[in-house]
Structure formats: C-alpha cells, structure tokens
Length: 210
Length: 132
Image (tube, rainbow over all chains, first blue to last red; front, side, top):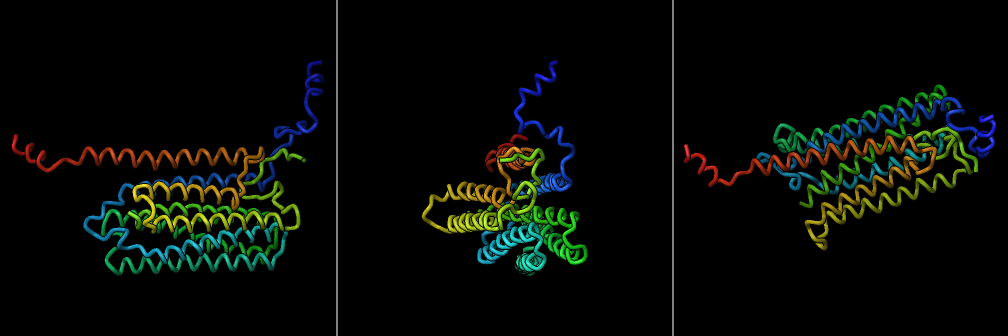
C-alpha cells in the first residue's frame, strides 16, 4: 500500500510533526498572541516616530531640540530603563525556577528603576512646560510630547501591571495563569526598552548632534 | 538532541519555559545582553557628542548603532532565535518590521518631496505676482 511505503520513508524524529502533535500549549498560544499585540503597538509607535521626524524642523520660531534637551538626564533615564530590562530578565529566571522571594526582589528593583525613569521624564516635561516649551508651542513640540509621552504612558501602565502581578503571585502563587501573565509582562517590558532605544537615538541624540 | 513539535513561546529562553541547567547559562545570556547594550548605548552617546567624526555621517552612524542594539535586545532579552521552533515568532516580527519601515520611510519620502516642491525662491514668487 502507498501509505505503508510513505511511513517507511519518514525518519523517526519526524514522526510527530506539528500537525500530529495537537494544539500548542496554552503558554505558547498566549505569548504568541501578546507578541502580535506588541508588534502592532510598535507599528503605532512608528507612526509617532514618522510624525516626529517630519515635524522636527517645524519649530515655529520656538526652541529647538538642541536648546531643550539635557543629555545627562537622558543618559540616566536610559541607564535606568536598560537596567530594569535586565532585572526583569532575572525576574523571569526566578519565576522559571519558582523562587518566590527572589521574584519579589527583582520585581521590586525593576519597579524602582522604572519609577526612577518616569520621575526623571516627568521632571523634564515639567521643566519644559514651565519654560514655555509645552506641546502647544510648535508642531515640533506637539510631536515630541506625543511620542515621548506615549512611551512614558506605556511605562506607567507597565508599573501598575507589575504591582498587580506581584499581588497575584502573593495570592495565587505560581499558577499556570499567573506564569503566563508574567511572561506577557516581561515581553511588554523588554519591548518598551527596544522602543526607548529608537527614541533616545532619534529624538535626543540626533536632536542634539544636529 | 530532541526536537519539540511545538513553537516556542516568544520570550522563553528554553523550549519549556523552565531553565534547563541550574541557572548559570540563562543568567549568562542576560548578562551578555546587558554588556553589549551598555557598550552600544555608550558608543551612541559618544558618537553624538564627539567632534572627531565627519558630522554628516553621525546621524547614519547613530541609526546603525540603534538598530544593532535593538537586535541585541531581541536576541538576548527576548530570546528570538533562528531555530525551527521560533519560525512563527520571527515571521510575525519580520512583518512588523516591514510595516514600520514602510510607515517611517514612506512618510519621510513623501513629506520631503512635498517640502521640496513647496519651497519656492522668493524672486520667482514675485514674478508670479507681477504676471497678474
């Protein structure tokens, strides 16, 4: 029979293909769905980036980026966010081996670094608005506040999410649902850091070096 | 080597989501990523501030450094690999990158064209007024 011949030709390790193995584990399905959401979020950010790049010279006689941006503050913000991405990775390792205390420790450090980033950004925004360089001053500043503010909003949501997740670990322990949500959180947090890489390069460094 | 029939979840550093050998190796991956990211960030800040480099090339250099750092983040923090269990993750990422490139490059291209066509030398504008 044809079928018998076909089976003999297949190598043993190919016997259980993806089609025969049944549905993928829920962890894979959930994380993949969240991955697609993150990519769509990045596409939304790309529109803000494009708007900023188009409007960067439309200062309407107001202050330019080189006059407004403080590189020291940006460097500290970048360091905070990068370090928090690293500690978030260490937190996922602690979750993988189900060590609750270590998870809390790395989550607390991640939260503190994220909050420090946000505090510096809010201080920067407040100083700019106080100096008359608010979003209503020029098209350049509107695009700046929209882009950087949108990223800051994402970081704030991430911080709230992290607190909620730690409450869930405290109450439910490392249940499968909690572990899936924590995986989604770490994807979200790392993606925010990737967006910040584009942001500090395009907005701050290119703005200052021109 | 055993191959799992399932895709790996994005962000997982091992097929099952559990660290394989007692912690040393995954920790090394994150630490390598942090080291490379710090190196690239420091280089970016240096490139933006130095006067040693040819000024018109600085923006391109910064863009290259940023894209390299995004790659480092994807590989070492998000554990995107070229493995067969990562094909779907990479394909989704490739589609996202395509859309991002179209939106950014397309906007810049069109707006640059419009700006070039809108910019009219002052005397030419005067001539137009004089004709009527």
